[in-house]
Length: 493
Image (cartoon, rainbow, N blue to C red):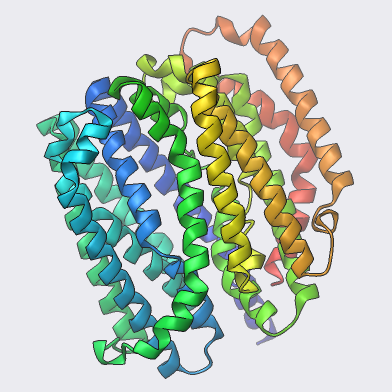
């Protein structure tokens, strides 16, 4: 009996769920990269630039229309004690998203001509009406995933994401190889997202009961928005900080240049493991803070930060050895000219090793997050424009890197203040310093080997594989014990 319980326990826990999520997310991310490779290879720079502009609109509007409701759903659902109250919050939050998302969809449709004029690309007219409604369904899907994580269905979410990624790949293959029509892509994606939303609501009804519109409570709107709006401003401004450089490049250059910049600055799945952990840890840390266990929340957050740094930096650092090869491999040789921008965004990826807003959000200090993000956005916009004029297209990427660093430091400072500690209490700086030294030495050694021997290999894929293999052989054995220690600590949660 004891051994059976022991085996069951080892199959549960934050780390186990997170690793399961990560495995499926790795496969999902790889499939996503295959989709990008398909589009980049078979579409011209103009067509891919048009696709990038439409998706830029989708991501920006999604960031506006989500209105912080994903964080609100997590906060109110996990803070409520009875199922009736939980369902009232759920119906009210989802109702607000339906309303706001629909308004945004109509607004994009009405303002289609000014939007097309901004991008100076008449080809957008073919797809903008379909792109207008994608933010609504993307936001609903994100909220539903948070809900299913909260009811301990992380593995179900992981499997669903895998299946959807396979379907998306099939859609892209048909659109690119057979029809070579970008319109088919957007029509198919909208239909796929609608079907997913319907599936999730039906599944939740089977698991926890129906979410009737009668439960929509006008009295809950004020507390929901009071919590969510400051967070909404952060989500929106943070997303704009991430994308404002693309808007600047779009305005001052052309569709083809944006195509190159978009791929070079594309957010690659470097943080898969650490982000999978935060999906599972958000409700855990929220409950720790709600029950006034700040010391435990600090310990949980610290383990998560240190683990995220080690895993993300090991994965990313090796790519600095071969930026041109990676641009050709991930996209196509016509995108290689953007390799310097790619390197800057590798640096940004190294900074995004964790969800820095986790503590402040759980503490309800969303206004602090809001003010920090507004300042970051204003600074980003001003210096993006100035840097573009002074040093060219790489300027906005560098500004984005510096602003991201500043914002992370500020948010960590306020998070530490809420937990009555200092930033240094979150990190094991001796361990991190040793870790950075090992990576630095590995980069020098492998860079030398690459210059002497590896660059003589003609095949790009083989050259990438050999270079990265040498790097991992040096770095991973020296850090594996530390990674496992942090993993075990997280699993105890």
